[in-house]
Image (cartoon, rainbow, N blue to C red; front, side, top):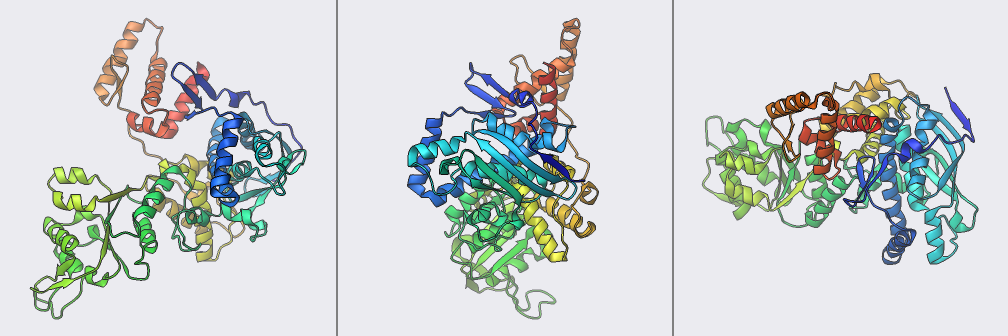
Length: 552
């Protein structure tokens, strides 16, 4: 059913205002679960002016649009949690109202048409007293075109994440141009003219193109806008065109090989071979022959000489996945190949020069493997010249909306399907999911859903078939200094003592609340880090904190 809302009033904002907490004695401001900071209009205007003057208006616009887009996506992910069991409109109103709480201007909904089950969306909004417009006019005077770039990005990011498909909120009137208010028109990205310059800011592929000079379509799923993604891409750009050995470190499924392929394409070896080897998939008896080749007659059945992966990658890049699976003997030969740039086939006495750039990947701490005598220390130092950490998907949730849009379009094209997007409850479920299998799991979920859903229908929960989230049991305790311990027995003993000595004044809820708050404080407000300390999921910590804070 279509929700047609003509010029409605926004709901009471006090529930959102209560999410802002000041702790002046510690110099902290909390906005929900994140630490915030106050900036005056003059400081914000100075920062914006520096960006424009140093980088130029086009780059500054792109940068501010993307920052706004990412923040809007984060707030959309929180909207349903902040206002559970309310109408679509009241939940959607979180975006305009949080934007107002941040001091960027207050919004009026002129019209909003939304179909949560199909992802259909059309809206018109007025933003009054825009901060961005004011500081721009103060610095440069009236503009011939819209100037509220972060505001448009925020609205686009929020609407895209909320609707489950890319939505572009275009500013068609702007206070910076002399209009009375800023007017935003929102509709799906594919319904706008693709040649318009602002459409590229919110395409999933263009998010990676700001870090590389690759053409759209060559990114192979390296899509993101989060801080963790940006840090990994920054490291890639620094070292991609060097001869340094890159080591990609991250959990299974985070896309280490995908990042390695991107690094290869960013290098001067891009036109040469990229050879990938999954060391864990090779039997130990075949690892050396696969890597270094075999000479004729080296063993029974070796009827001819055969080049190994090093020779096949000559001039290009060799990617060694699960490098800790190599035997110690193979590690020794790999070290020689890296140092001397020459290899020797199994059963041969002749050495061959190879020009190969090696990249490796592992999903465990190499230092621990060295301590366990499973990995050579000299090879460890050789491979860790330039490590590139790839964060798990649960730590780069800002990227989920972009990945959803990218993967949906990719699999629709691959399977000849027409799927407009995701339902509201599917979006909410994907935002809350912990993704133990990381991006590989998200790919599988969306491809399966595309195959199951009918043409023209939005993906819903039954097609996603998310696994029941598995969480580790809480194992923590509060010591006399108020700090966390990982001893479950200590927790039980101390909790029992507190309850026994309490004579009814302090119950388990109070203890739990204290533990949660201490964990968040120790983690400097990072809920994901606090959750790892406690053996809980980020979602569990967030919900329990909200419960206790409402009760308090």
